[in-house]
Length: 193
Image (cartoon, rainbow, N blue to C red; front, side, top):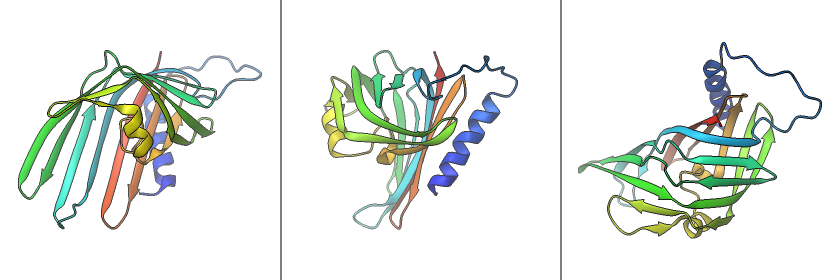
C-alpha cells in the first residue's frame, strides 16, 4: 500500500467519523490540528509475510484503548498506564497463537508532522526515552525506549511512518507498506481529550 493511499484512508476515516459535528470558530493563528492531547480509541491492523524458512505467516493486532498521546513542539509524549492490552493472533502453517502485550509507564519521542488536517508523521525512533515497559502474555517484560531506538515496530507507529487525518475530535494514523517478503496495515484511532 502506498503512502498516498494511507493518507487518503486516514482522511476518509476522520471525515466519516466527524459527519454532523460542528467545528469551533476559526482563530487567527491556530496550531496544527494534531497539536493537543489524544486518547487511543483502539488499534486495528495486520502484518503478514514469509519467515526465514519460507513459511507464510500473518499477525492480527487490536486493542490498546486508553493510551494517552500529547503532540506538539516536535515531540510525542505517550502515557500507557491504565491502557487496555494490545491483543494479537499469529497464524502460520503450524496453527495459530494468541497473546497480548500490556504497556505501562511513559515514553517521549521526536515526532515530525507534515500537513494540518491530513498529511504524514515521521517518528524519530532513535530519540525515544522514558520508563515505558511492555509486559507480554508470555516471556519477560521489556523497556520500550531501547527497543524502539533499535527497531521500528511498536504500538507507536509501524515502520516509523504514518499517514494521518485529523479533525477537531479525531486523529487517525495509518501505517502501511508492502515489499516482496512482508506487508502491513495498522490503524490507530485517537479521540481528542
